Image 1 (tube, rainbow, N blue to C red):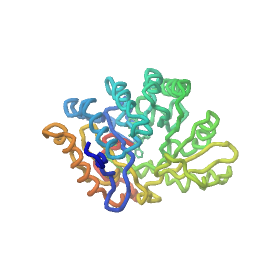
Image 2 (cartoon, rainbow, N blue to C red; image 1 turned 90 degrees about the horizontal axis):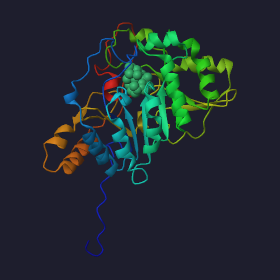
Image 3 (cartoon, rainbow, N blue to C red; image 1 turned 180 degrees about the vertical axis):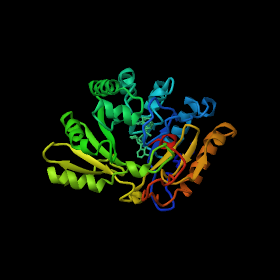
Amino acid sequence: MPDGHMPIKPAPLVDRFGRTVSYLRLSVTDRCDLRCAYCMAENMTFLPKKDLLSLEELQTVAEAFIRRGVTKIRITGGEPLVRKDIGALFQGLGRHMGAGLEELTLTTNATLMTQHANQLVAAGVRRVNISLDTLNPDTFRQITRRGEFDKVMAGIDAADRAGLTIKINTVALKHQNADELPEMIKWAHRRGFDMTLIEVMPLGLTGEDRYDQYLPLFEVRDALEQRWTLSDEASAPANAGPSRYVRIEETGGRLGFITPLTNNFCAGCNRVRVTCTGRIYMCLGQDDHIDLRAALRDSADPQAALDAALDRALFAKPERHDFEITAPDERPALPRHMSTTGG
Ligand code: SAM
Ligand code: SF4
């Protein structure tokens, strides 16, 4: 390098509204071993495997984001742990921990966690979000349309034993778990897990009526306040994202609320999503996307082509989402399922 010249640091990912993107959610498959009634149709058709980016391509995409200042990557899906040889991607990305990447994590339904927990820890994963909507095995089978509750519990135990910090994600459902939420919160906090409640979002057709599922979280919070003392956390944890946290005095644990419908939290959005076919979605609630596959496969200089695609994506990041569930039998706000982009 000539004297006095510093290497050029790639520009950070800043959008038109001044928001810096530091967080990537990377979906590694659209497939899943469950069919949660708010997420997918029972007879869901999945993408042909040939349409998916290879694990090496997914790693190249993730590395392009790390170069541009992304410090946190969440692997998601579909169910990320059903992707064959997924351990290799965790290992590959884990090598960037402490060298650009500060957190590597995943969202999972935990059905396969017993096989993967130790390997994930070895790769550098420290925290995991586990989705669980009920502690009742019959309700679990109803919601997931096929899941085995005991397998998930064994998965949670395995993650805990392996030393992973667990957060439980629970979609609040008007008929299926509304009455059970206090018990679930007590269970999670007794086990030392944070828990986050999520409002159901109108993404994709599932064969069920969203209106019939949708439970606004302000109602849940009101009901919890009748029973417990909830105090807003003065400083949200670093990984809070759209979650607003309270501390519950009686359980001693932390509870988050993700309210995409009743409260818009887009002003602080720091994330983008990449699908398993290589599309960047700049907002979960909008359909604008940019395809990275051509940059990866057809360019003589994939690194430069990926960088240019990331710049285009950032420029196009919308200001906010606009979800609504106001009447029975409404069409979804977007045809895309949550399993396409990852939660
Ligand atoms: N299969 C993994 C799991 O369930 O944790 C990861 C993918 S899943 C799509 C990610 C998260 O999205 C889960 O917590 C799930 O409950 C949530 N989710 C799926 N569809 C949703 C919807 N329509 N509205 C709100 N949350 C949804
Ligand atoms: Fe599968 Fe997760 Fe969707 Fe349930 S929420 S069907 S576990 S992708």
